Amino acid sequence: MEYTGLADPKAADECGPGLKAVCKALGIPPVLSYGACVDIGKMTQTAKEIADTLDVDTNMLPIVIGAPEYLEQKAVADACTAIALGWLVHVAPVPSVTGSDVIVKTLTETTETLGLGKLTVEVSADKTVQLYVDHIEKKRKELGI
Image (cartoon, rainbow, N blue to C red):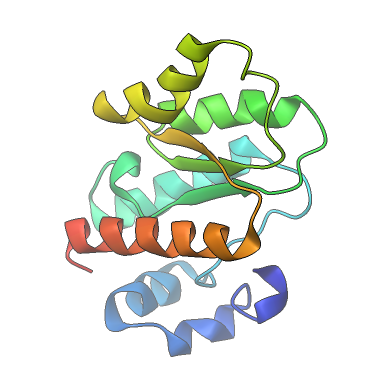
């Protein structure tokens, strides 16, 4: 996503009025990239500022945390934090939690029914893009933006 130009603040001019207003108010681009390494602390702070601007909880935001080529188990720990904050988390390759059906069901299904986020694993780039778009559109519709 970073290489599409959407991580440039000027890309806000291409957004719809709601997202454009948020981007302009905060001086941010429509796609936020934190580089090659997951940094849940920075993401949490950014989400809080956006949520405060919109006067909503962070779990209502159209946020997808993507770690499509994670290399460290720290990414799995950060994913659990993001799930607790109510965000959709995409990882690939398959994390080492699949040995337990209980853990897999908890992270991919149960957490969402509790008002939290959820983990999704997808290795196909095309399916991943559609997953991101569907989630973002769903959350935007819920927010009325």
